[in-house]
Amino acid sequence: MKIALMDSGIGLLAAAAAVRRLRPDAELVLSSDPGSMPWGPRTPEDVTERALAVAEAAAAHRPDALIVACNTASVHALPALRARLEPAVPVIGTVPAIKPAAAGGGPVAIWATPATTGSPYQRGLIREFADGVSVTEVPCPGLADAVEHADEAGIDAAVAAAAARTPDDVRAVVLGCTHYELVAERIRAAVQRPGAAPLVLHGSAGAVAAQALRRTGAAALPDAPDRGAVTVLLGGREGALPATALTYAEGRLLQAVSSAR
Image 1 (cartoon, rainbow, N blue to C red):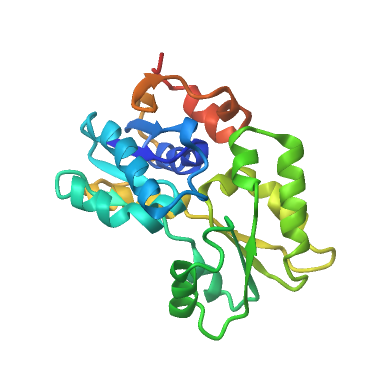
Image 2 (image 1 turned 60 degrees about the horizontal axis):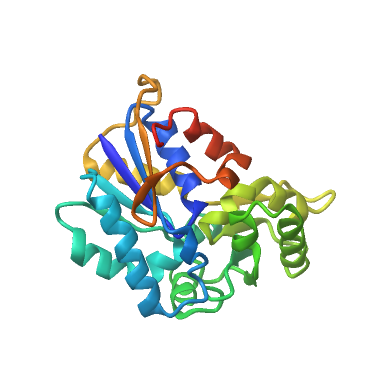
């Protein structure tokens, strides 16, 4: 089995690691275009064009499914990606985990890029899945970019600023950008209030990994032999995981089995 994942940059690491844990024997194709990152501030048309290029580079490796491990690309480019690749390659988008977060009763905060925060897309998900639950949308300017470049000071500053905009009574935080999952514990530490119930973080990596297996008709086999190769595509060309990826546990997990040159 071969699963491809795409993103502007290293935000795909969390979902790729989740696939690796479910199916250690699956081959992975990680397709990104770090030179064009971040996609959040770009127009929907520009995002769609870049997402199609990154996806087609992955599709050339004939995967059994493609995970769009990027919230921005899922918002703007999912219909175009499906029109281009399906039915030959099932395409799985990434949706913020608002539904499971709201099921806990709230209050809920949704951390997302400034472009996604307040967007019709996100507001629609809130209306559909969190009606009657207190939801605060928290923009996180600069956080995805700081994570991409492993900018420790930048991450700390962006997380602190977003935490200051998060109400004290929040019980759950939705990580509405795949990059944020790489620094989930730092977000938890910044938002958790002394004496409050443990904060619950809701990412999307596990859900999209499981959905990719369902779309391919494959079962989870976490005890399968750890032999699945990893191919890294940067701007369509084979390469190695960026050095910044290796600062995160998910990147180191994938590097351990990477066959990229």
